Length: 504
Ligand code: AMP
Image 1: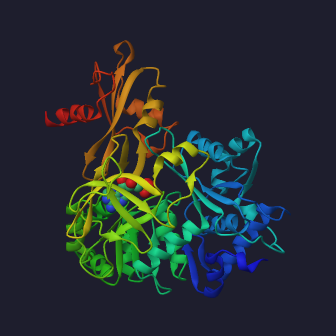
Image 2 (image 1 turned 45 degrees about the vertical axis):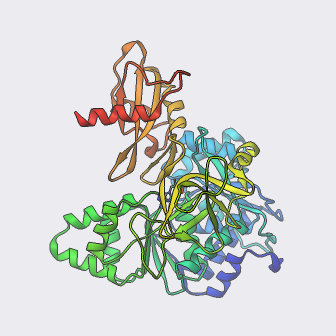
Image 3 (image 1 turned 180 degrees about the vertical axis):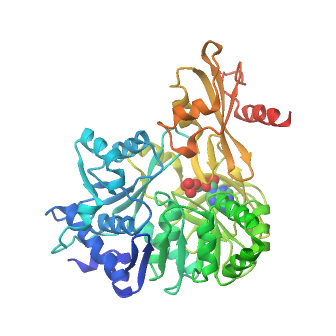
C-alpha cells in the first residue's frame, strides 16, 4: 500500500485502535473493526482490480455500522461514494444512479428489491452489504491522492432536478478539520446521530467530525423523540446536532412528558457540552424554549452542501438568537451587491464563500459550475447582513428553493412532476412559512376541464415520484395563476393566495 497517499481519515483511525467508533443497532464497533470491515468492502469492490479510479459507487444502507463500513470501503478502493436516500422512491433513486453514472450499487438487503432492478436495467453491478462485508481482506489497497473526488451529494437548486455536488477528499478534510477545531471535538466525545446520511449535515458534521478525532458516533436507526430524550437522560452523550424541526419535535415531546421524567431529561442535557442547530433558520422561539428546558444555548451555524459550514456562533462566548456568527477557520466569507461588489459595512448582500472547503464542481455540469462562481468565489444565493460583527441570514435570492424540515427542495422540480398528473393543467409551487417545518411545500393548481383534485389524492399519486418531503402539504385549486406582463408566474403573489385562505 502506498501509505503516503492514504487518506488522512484512515491513517488517523489506525491511531484510534480499540476505541469505540460506531455504536448502532448492530452493536459496538471499534476503529480497528471499522478499518477491517471497510478493507473487506474495498476488496469486494475492487474485485481483483487495483483501483476504482474514481468510479461512482451508489450505496443505500440504513444509518448504522454497515453504512460507515461501505462509505469508507468505497474511499479506500479509490471510488467516489454516492449515498442514496433511504426515504426516496425508486424514481429518485434511479435518477441519482443514472446521473452519477454509477458503475455499481451496494445495498443493504432491505433495499435489494428496489435497487436490483435499477442495476439490471442499467447493466451495472449490484452487490449486497452482506456480500461485501464477507469478502476476504485485500492484499493491497490503492493510494488515494486527496485531490481526487471522494463524494457526490445530490442537492436541489433553481434548475429543476437535483445536481451532484462533487467534493474532493481535500474538500472533506478542510470541512471536517475546520469544524473539529472550532467546536472543540476530542476523542472523549460521543455524538448521537439522528440525521439522514445522504446529506452534508449528517455525513460531515456528525459522522466524519466524530470519527476524525477518535470520538464515538452513536447512530439511531430512525429519529424517535422519546429515544433521543432517553439517551440524553442517560448522561453519556456529549454532543448533539440537529435541524430546527427536530428541536421543535423534542420540545413538544418534553412538554407532553410526565413532570417526573422531565427533570431527568433536562438533567441529562446538563452533562452535554455542545448542541448545534443548522441547515435552516432556527426560530428564536425554539432557541429560547430550548434554553429554558435544557439550560443549553443552541449553537447555530450556516452552511451548504457546496461549501460545508461557513459561519458559526462561537463555542465559547456569546451565541445570539437569529445570528449565525462569524466565518469558521479557513473559510473566507463576504457579502456582495447585485454587481458583485463587496457591500458597505452594515448593508445587506449575497453571501459568497471561498477556501479549500468549497466543492470542486457540479457533476458533469460545467455550465452550472461556471455560473455558480464569480472571480473564484462561490455564490450561495443566500442574503445576509453583518450586525455587531455577526452575520444574520435574511433569506434566499431565489423563491424557487424551499427549505422544509431543513431539506432543500426545488419548486421547479415539483412543478414538473405535478404537471404529469392527468388532472393538472398548470401549477405553481411555493414555500409557505410554517413554525414547525420552516416552510411547507404548497401547490396552486389549475385543473383540466375544471376537474376536482384533493390534496390526499395528489400526494398519493406523487408519492411514487417524489421523496416524501417534496410532497405538497397544501393544495389550492385556482382558476388562474398570477402572472406578469411577460406571462411569468409571480411566486410572491402565489404565496399571498395561500395566506389569504389562512386569514379567512
Ligand atoms: P443544504 O445544502 O441542503 O445544506 O442547504 C443549504 C441552505 O440551507 C443554505 O443555502 C441556506 O439557504 C440554508 N441554511 C443553512 N443553514 C442555515 C441557517 N442557520 N439559517 C438559515 N438558513 C440556513
